[in-house]
Image 1 (cartoon, helix red, strand yellow):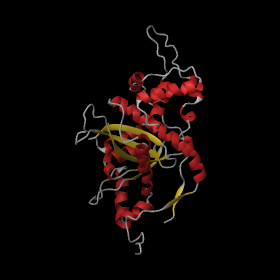
Image 2 (tube, rainbow, N blue to C red):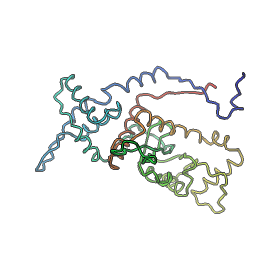
Image 3 (cartoon, one colour):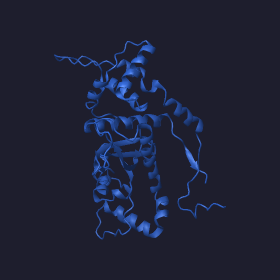
Length: 318
């Protein structure tokens, strides 16, 4: 039987090859290297300095808590197993290093605050890709998960040039995707050149906040409007982008617009969501919302570290 051509079969799966396989394979090996997660700088700043205030003093610096939690998240270890793993590692290395217990890790996680997870320097504006996904949360002491299991919504913003996560946020499951775009863009200091998102972000507020981040320059907003979308006869400066998308789709068609406009690059943020769920997991570990927000930022820092170690440079062959 002769298989249909890709032009005949809309959902035929493409085949890709990787140009930089040697470098990418070396990066995959480095992801399991403990020196990446427990560097000399982390060991030197492990103990908390004296606060100068009366009362009990902290034993572990925030960097120590972050390093231990990072190792636990990378290797999918619960807090007690993470504590045991670090203790045995300190004994093997013959290090006089105090290891925080699991209760300290759980308590200090909620107090870590804002974790800086951006590391790649930039010399130009950012082409931003935005998407969201759901993450399951702990159900307590129930023997069976409820049918309508509670979950959180993870919002990610990715730099299209580097693949790095530049902003992240966590919200309730009923929060609209477009409602968290201002929160994501506030985390970005650089100028935006373009913003790409799916149809769930087709809202006036998204266009307005994107144009405001252009710092005097026009920002290309690539959001596919609904099939029955109509042109705005009196558009604002931001709404002109939506009218432009509607006209282009009418002239070129959906498939051609996706390719010619650059909207197809949005698949990179979908790939980042896939990497998050594959490497970090589909569930949140912390039981409090504050702890879950810190957990998401720490996970974003882990993924960015792995991105710096090496990513595949692939091209389609069929």
